[in-house]
Amino acid sequence: MTLVSGRQLLNTDGETHARLRGVLGPHLATRALMDKRPMVTAAVKVLLDRLADEEHIDLVTDFAEPLNTVVIARLLGVAEDACAAAMACCRLLLGPRHPEEPEMRSAYLEMSEALAEFVSVREHEDAGDDDLLSVIVGALRARRIRRREAVSMVGSVLLGASSPPVTLIAVACALALCDQDFRFTVASGSVECAVEEALRYQPPVSFSSWRFAREPLEIAGTRIDRGDAVMVLLAAANRDPRVFAGGDRIVPDRSGPAGHLSFGQGPHYCMGAAVARLQAQVAVPAFLDRFPTARLVRPLEETVWEGVLGDRRPVSVEVALR
Image (cartoon, rainbow, N blue to C red):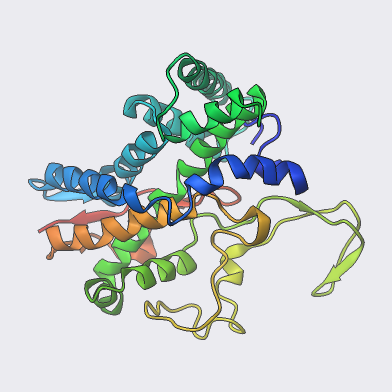
């Protein structure tokens, strides 16, 4: 996360965190995104039309990733090709490679220049658009945030959105192709329940961000001293048998008050959660309606994944459409 320098949501707390979150949070809430559903629906239709003549596709690179690029570009208010290039840098920078490798340094510089340019160009345009970049620049003009915070905020949006929605869409579509109960739940109009179960079962981000102990404590027999770094394995919490009966199984109509932790909890709850949910809720039933006989080329259990501490996503999910 060294790319997102300066104060930003992941490295602030208290009043500073509340001030920064207050800029974009209201615009990314579920209610605020309701009028974006037609845009997402139209983007899904365009992609499915492009795939209509294909025999085999990769759910990741041919469907989920391009859909996410279109949606994030339009929400942010930047060109799709510029958004795609920036998110490609994000995925590389969030990966396991050493930060001193030439390709990593090049991606860092490219991303830094892109972020600064996004903000600078919008500053010289008339205000009034409701896209996220205009909201950020509006807050900058109103002196609610500083320039470095504005640039970091754009970077946070792109970093946070570069991979998790892709994983959710691909995994949810794959589950619908291999699990009849999951598919029935989607077809019966309860796609929201199915998407939540996909999030619980295969969270796009396995670990929480870093936390630091404010005082000495002991958890499950492990001593943690003041100042020690702690990361929570969200994927394990999502299968805690004390909370989720049969947590290692897919139960798409799972009921009860307990919720998963795939988007975190508390003040640092993922601000883009509603964007990921919206994409999946539109994309999964539309994909099944367009390709009712689609099937996975290989079992989902054989999927190769990449990423551990940051974003975690399938390398590919191959599907035969006919």
